[in-house]
Length: 453
Image 1: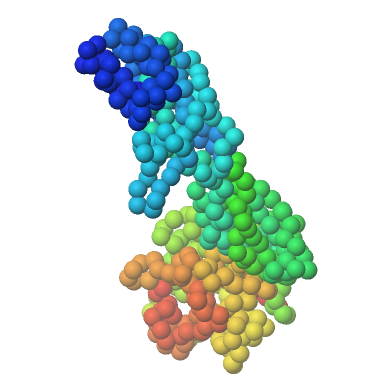
Image 2: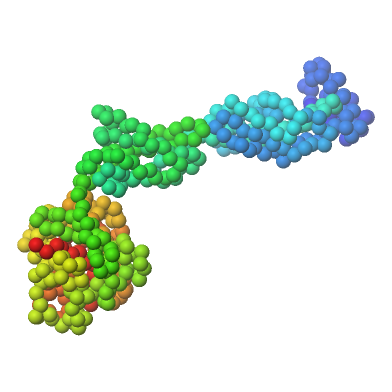
């Protein structure tokens, strides 16, 4: 009906009588549609005093329960009506804001003299369409273009959950970002399904990781994570598990040569450094020539540098020497381990064979972080993948996915090689090599010192 009135105004008074009720199905419909108001509208259009339809409708401040509708000022408007309709679709076509849908399924939710309106009491995760009209004493304009909006929904459950032991009493839980999440909740249990130990809330964070502390050593914990926003909290994620390592009493080894101090640990009847040596001598390097790698992995030494003998012995046999209690580059009272001493360590840690180079010693000696396939660090040895220095590529195999390589003081009765020990990321054993390219005395490998008996 409103469109008929506006068209009549444009065609002139002569057409008014015909078009004022062009939208009526029956004669009496004119009175049902407030003919006096329609005539007032007609006169307002003719006199140029009827308001313009609002434009620039947008929706801001979208939350779970409310939104703010905004629009540009309309000429000659005294106030505005705001209409809301729930978005409708038949699966192929969205009827939001269409004439077919809006007049039957929308209703006025408010009026205002400003160019914004806050609509509250909405349903989270629901879609709505908003239209606005301008009003003055001459009538109300047709609806503006519709603006569709969906209120904030409860977020999805987090995915990509991981749990990694940081120490014997702490675990780091991480997850992937969840869209629309404002914070995350971490839950812990000591039973996989929580039937006998329900998942308890242990922390809340806005980050994508959380460190759970105050735990017990050698204990398996199960974790779930949820995401939250103003709409509510998601379902809990699938669980992940993590076992804290055994607690270890570490000693200290001050190195008076450069002031560094190293952790030490007793394993069986041996006392080992619990980290790689980082003492600078000729024939040694930081991985990738970066000092930060020396702080993490220690230095990489050629065999002669590790033995503290002339560099020419990297290419010729050292017949006059002995691998028993050979100090080499180690601090006073400590020495470079022999092949036999490495074998004793491996067998104590679960290795099998004459020198313990089979079995699961590698898993037991690996650190609980720094590897893709982390170890249990059952003995506190804390082995890391420090990589090696070789001919090409010059630096190789450090970090996750890589391996750790350590010298022994024992040559392989040849010109170019010595016995070495190797732990690879995806292997569980502490391997031994002596004929491979890895064992060339020209390579740069890590050093672990063992205490003199």
